[in-house]
Length: 296
Image (cartoon, rainbow, N blue to C red; front, side, top):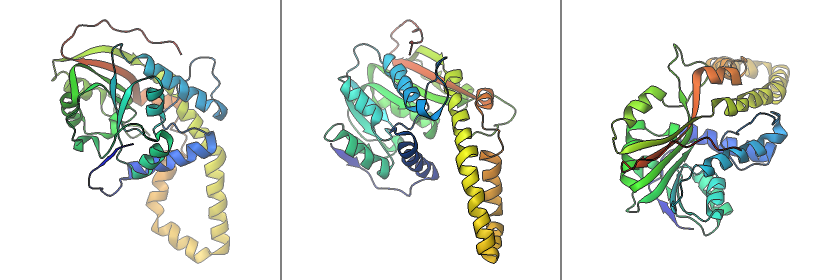
């Protein structure tokens, strides 16, 4: 496996969060995927089904890869699980990964497979042009105008851009969720690239929202009781130190409490504030019909 490295920068809190999420997902659920699951009607929302739901998501994503695509750039490859699936489908895959930890995980999983550009997408330097550039829950982490211009430079004529990610709706407030580009602004930016023609726009918000309920249940059933037990132990064993630390970190603790333990991060609220879309575009102005959602 070829690793293309640029100068490493200090890891962001987002990268740290992804690294920790992968560790937890692998230990708790036996999955290497970092993306949401796709929960069709009839699939119970419970921890034992998360891996199946994530496989559903991957199946849906792969089903929208157009015929004739041979070379794919997987932006934000995570642990390499999606790249592994794409390689198994016969595609030639290169990857972009800004996280040293996840790159090492991907190297272990993929062996001598794709070229990994160990940099941020905005810093990507390659002369290669791809049939398809793929963003699976990585689009939200990249500067929006820069993303489209960089993608335009790395797509061959007639190539495709496939995005599967959530966006912010136009609501009076942002609610309890961070992340996601404003959907209206995204559409405005895309309109500035007249050769980038829309082929598919599929709303899968309802099918991805149950992930928030699953996470909320994990927090209330596992994390919150563990936190309470640790705080109680610290308060009784080291009362002075405990009070000092809780005073020093009062505001971060209050923010975490409001964000994760208020009960607001539910699937229902996710559907109010976010729109999860599967979007397919073609570069070069080639007319193409809108695709129907695939069945998973």
